[in-house]
Amino acid sequence: MSSNKNALIRYKTLDKCLKNKYKKYTLEDLIDECSEALFEFEGKESFVSKRTIQLDLQNMRSEKFGYEAPIEVYERRFYRYSDPDYSIHNISVNENDLKAMNNAVQILKQFKDFSMFKEMNGVIQKLEDSIQSTNQKSIIHLDKNEQLKGLEHIDILYENILNKKVLKILYKSFKARESNQYIVHPQLLKEYNNRWFLICWHKNKIMNLALDRMEEITIEDKIEYIDKDFNADRYFGEVIGATVSETQRPQNVIFFIAQKHAPYVKTKPFHHSQEIIKEDESGTTFKICVQLNFELERMILGMGEFIKVLTPRKLKQRIAKSLKLASENYTSDQSEN
Image 1: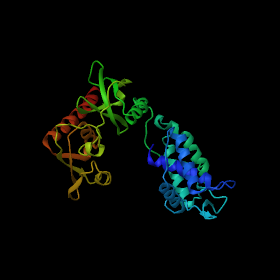
Image 2 (image 1 turned 30 degrees about the vertical axis):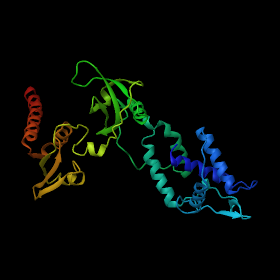
Image 3 (image 1 turned 90 degrees about the vertical axis):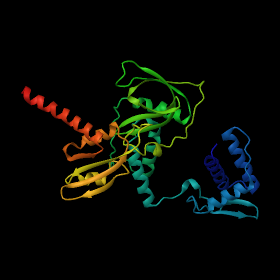
Image 4 (image 1 turned 180 degrees about the vertical axis):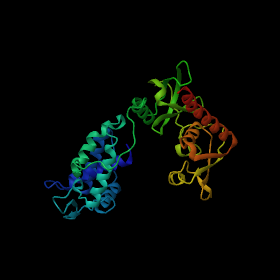
């Protein structure tokens, strides 16, 4: 059991003892009660030291966790609350606390119908009841699409990353004619632009599998899980989106944004490496240092005529080709009419 859970069980046990009006507790009694509570929870012998309980009582007395418990020693050896009505579960909250909790509830409510958060519905309802926020209209709205294909896989993938289980995934990419099976060691769930991806270890390399292309997932209990201690910030640090090349180095991408749209790119950078190179009446020239991938191209194409790629030449040519093909689609429509 984690040290945090141990501490919570001890605090709860101490609270029960200290507010008991019909029994006297010495320090040794408190140690025994906490040891017994941990034994009942864990199912194994758990000895609690005298020093641990002394520190627990000190923490409960202090402002450290917001308790400020009125613990007193009477008759030189017994412990109790000087206020018989006190309990650490009756901590009062001020108006600012209530506002902060209410804001948190409003955000949590955005997710309560999402399958990953269904188990939280009861918790959210209790929070709403306790802070009387049920009748408040939502003033925060997060973008989400619960009809996306593949969301049904999130629960099983999440649980097996947590439990470090090897998975066999039947997968069919958009380009493949037939499905393929992959034995993978799942490391991370990645969301980008409302699409979800599983980042996993497969045949000695990191692999990226889109959840919407997964057809079947089964657990492989006989294979030992490989934990790569995956660092998502470092792995995705040089890309836009979820597609990372093991061989490609990041490049300086320089692009011009027309004056009317430059503020949008300034306030919502394409990438954390973004910087301004030049700025004048016509617009702003930016630079980012990233790998060239599909998501970068989609982002640039999404800006339409308001962006112009200056370098690298390879990316510039690919964007020009895509825009030419798009233009031809509309040109052909006009000729048919």
